[in-house]
Image 1 (cartoon, rainbow over the protein chains, first blue to last red):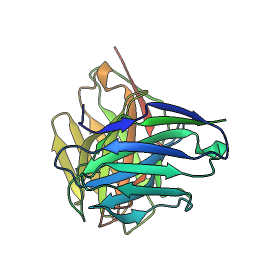
Image 2 (image 1 turned 90 degrees about the horizontal axis):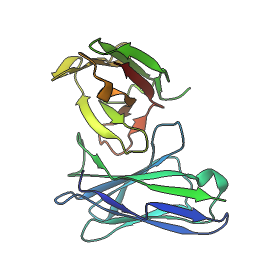
Image 3 (image 1 turned 60 degrees about the horizontal axis):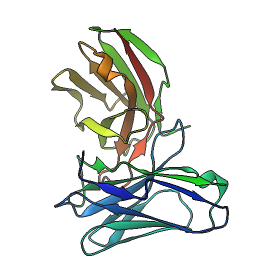
Length: 114
Length: 111
C-alpha cells in the first residue's frame, strides 16, 4: 500500500455527463500527477499539480481539468464525457518540483462511459 | 511513432532464468527513465529509475541505459513466478512533469 487513495473505485457515467475523481496524496507529498490508462496501454499523462498550481499538461483537451487543495489532495474533472474516456484513471503523488524520481500511484478509478 | 516503445510480449521465461525487457525512446530530451511493474488489476509500482548511461543494479534487477542508442533495458535475474506481471518503461523530461509510458511488456515466469 502506497498511502495514496482514490475515490470512487468504480464509476459508470453516460456520454455527455460530467465526472469528478478524487485523490489523496501520501503524507508529506505536495505534487500530484494524473494519468489515463486505457485497457492494454500504458498510462498517459494528463496533468500535474504542484502546490495548488498546474505544473505541466499532456495532450488532453480542456474538458479535462483539475484542482489541488491546500492539503495537496486533488480532483480530476472531465466534462462532456465521451465513450473513449472509458479507462482507469490513476493519480500519483510525489514530493517536490523539478526532477522527481519516485512517485507512488493510487489504486485508480475505473470509469466506464456508456 | 510512439515516443516510448516496448515489445508487448508476452515474454515467457522459466523460473530461475534471466528475463530481459527492452525499451526504446524517440525523444532525445528525455532525461530520466523508469521501470514500473503492474500486476493485473493493480496500479503501477516503481521498480527502479536510471538517468545516467550504464548499468544500475538493485537486488535482482539491473537497469541499463544507452542514451546514444536511445535504449533502456531491465534485466531480472533468478526470475520468480511472482515476477509475472506487465512491465512498463517510462521516460520523462528534466522537470519530470511529462512522463511518457510505453504500452508495457507482459512477462510470464513459469514454475
